[in-house]
Structure formats: C-alpha cells, structure tokens
Image 1 (cartoon, one colour):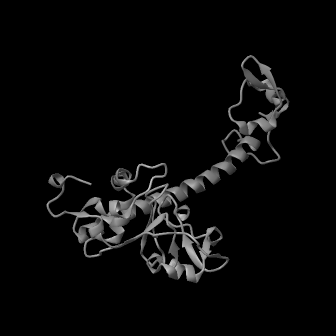
Image 2 (cartoon, one colour):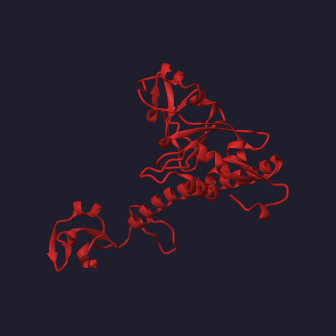
Image 3 (cartoon, helix red, strand yellow):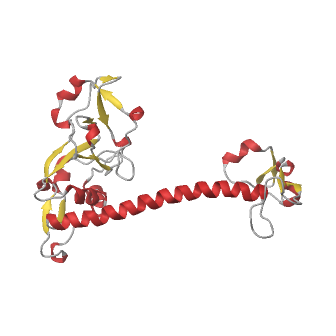
Length: 265
C-alpha cells in the first residue's frame, strides 16, 4: 500500500492475512432455511455509508439454527469486522453486542485482527480509507460482478504504525467523525427551522422594524396570477408533469395552465 522507503522507521509492512486471526467467507450459500424468527443474517445492504449497521429489525432476514450451525465460522462475535466482497465492495462495519451469534451471507467476509499487531479502532479507519479501497479494486476479479477472493485479500500489503500510535490515530479520527456527526445533526435541525421560517416569512412577511407580522395583520398584500408575474417556457423534471397540461411550442412542451396559479406578493 505504501513504499517502505517513505514510511516512518517505526512502522511495519504486513500482509493483510498476517494481520488477521480470522478471515473467512462462506464456502457456499445454498439451501438456506429462512424462518420468521431465528438467527439474524447480516448482509451488505444493512451496512450504512458511515460504517454503521442498520439495526432496524424489520429489515433483517433470519435463518434457522440448523442453517447457522452448519458453518460455525460465519457466526459473528462482538467486535468482529464484516466487509462486502462481491458487487458493491469494501463496505465495512463492526458487529455490536446485540448481534452476537448472527451469521453473514456469502457476499460478506468475517474478519478478526491480531491485536498484537493491529488496533481494531485504527483498522476501522484504514479499511474505509481510499488507500485500502483502491487496493481492493486492484485485487478484485475482472468479471461482470466484482468479487474479492480471500487469497487475494490476504496478499494485500499494509503499512502500520506501532499499536500505541494506532490507538492515538484512531482517537483523532474518531473525534473528527464525532464532530461531523454533530455538525450533520445541527444542519438537519437548521433545515427544519428554515422550513418553518420560510413558511412564516412568505405568508406573513415582516413589519417596518424587520419583525414577523402577526398572522392577522399582513398589510396590503396583493393576490396575483402566476401568469401575470412570470413567463414560464419549460419545466425541468418529470415530477412536475402531473400539475400541468401541455401544448407543443416549437421543440418545447409548454404548460397551458400554469398562469392560473395564484401567488401573494
């Protein structure tokens, strides 16, 4: 993944296989006994873009205990990593305690890291990095559906700092992720506030001092047909077509009835 000559002296180069104590994918995935309530099955579709599993049980599928027991090495433990290795490759998640004992599908691979070499928190960031994702692409099979075979995954080389440094790096990146999460939450709240503010301002306006008017005192607002205020020649997007009848105007379809809409100004 990185030239040995340009990495810090204390860093080491490992094969991915040497960093793992478990790297396993279903040898087959046929004759699965699905049941209404059984062992949860983890599949790539449940992994969100932020690397968190969607825990909405309505989205889960369940297999029988007999099916789950047929391949003990696909039974997941808390802290295991799972990664998609077929189709959409490289989606990574860590298994929470609530999914202890769940199973993976054949489109996922189960991973456990050698903690003497690799700090799991650091590994989570490494696996989602462009550096590692590009390596996955380079070792994937050149078929219609991209697939990563376990031997090729094992052969990927990674450069890793000492474990204590990995922990510190993970802490810094975790803090950045938390800041992003809180910022996204704030943006979502501000969008909701703006939506309400937009409605009030466009229906009630502001007085001479810039304060929101009372709803019963909107002043001398005018009611106008949209056709008296604007000239519409074309609408982009099929989502608007249900609102209009059209007539042919040159190469464009022009709405007939837009001018009958009313606006307050």
